[in-house]
Image (cartoon, rainbow, N blue to C red; front, side, top):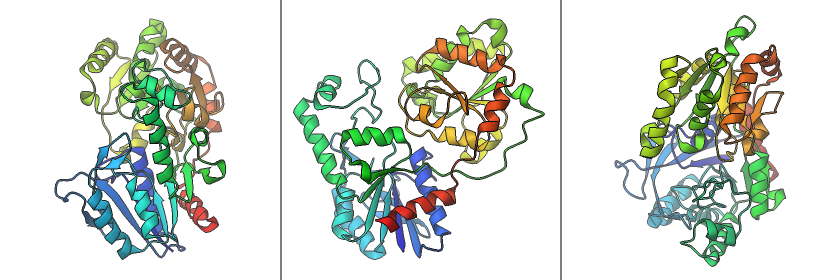
Length: 411
């Protein structure tokens, strides 16, 4: 069996969840005896690669210079790169199975070309967010009010983005669905996302749930540390408005000072400087007094290999996102470290964290409820130990690869 894994970025240059999931699938398939050869094709914007061209990164790993020309219809900026370079690449590799982990920055035309050039191949498309459903960055959040969106429709989408009429959104949906017909099967990392795409139009028998694989390692012992760990909280991820760091900082301000002084919160993340000035100012206003008080440490960016060590220093991982999320990698990473998660109780976060079993939920977007939840976490004797003991190891990289191969065999 010859396999091709396609992603919208290479982890050498981009460490988003979808890119990492795709690359881990590629690496695990390399070691699977059922696979004769596996190649990894990742989109890049490196100027050293000519527009539309494909260049070798290292053995069996390739970079494809592509970008989007039209985010409304998800069309490629360099269609000749699909009709020429990509077509030649497929003819050279002739994969039997193709796992596509994203079409962002590449273009939907890729799916059509895969089916046209390889009519007998098994094509599987993994959906990592709601981009096909929602024009607003694929987050299903209302563009002007920032409210959560519960269901798409041409009328709802036009009300959200009035520069396009309802007919345009109807055409967009059917244009995307037509390209999706090139896929034999769809994968969602969460049941929540799966149900959103079923409501959008994918038949339920054509979309399955496979969680993203995780490394397997022995977590640090907990017994001697539990008393101090239950007072330490960590945020890990990008510092953006939708990740909710401001909600966490506001919650700390709302706590009783005597309780707040008993806890330590660490912020591990980057890209605050890339956010809107208004949001940067808000974060600075919120964090400065907490840092002075000593209950907040702004640790900063980290590399993926540094995460286990950093996470081992905290007892709780906080996921305060204000959008639905899908299957946040940080939740699975926390469970690898046997750390309970405090998460907003919506979407993929609510699905992955069992309230009162492997973590705690709080009302999404509510600093008041998060403040109460933080107080509960530090003030309830035995809670941290009980939740931590309930956590099981997430699916491994090898199990993840076997699940994907099973789809191809069944197809």
